[in-house]
View 1: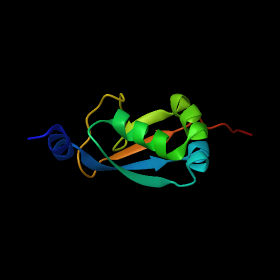
View 2: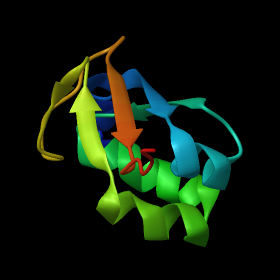
View 3: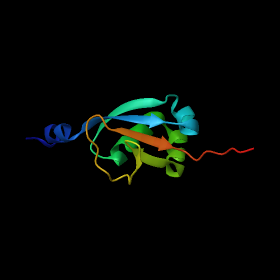
View 4: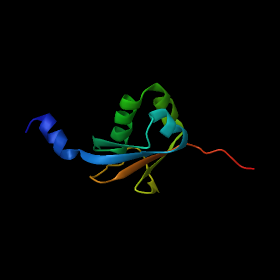
Length: 91
């Protein structure tokens, strides 16, 4: 099997959810990507959404299916990756 064919069988369709400022930078709150790891999802999103998005990624918390994870974590079809930037506020 060729590498491209083998890779496509390993990648899964994953939803990326974006919140607050990173959502504004992307111009959307949700996107889908084919990837094998959380890091691949983020890399594809960075390529799609540009420099302002890329600058915000390092300050975000990364969650997979509602739990904090390392970016090297594998993903499977139907998973949901979320990028959560710091929230300021108070009163």
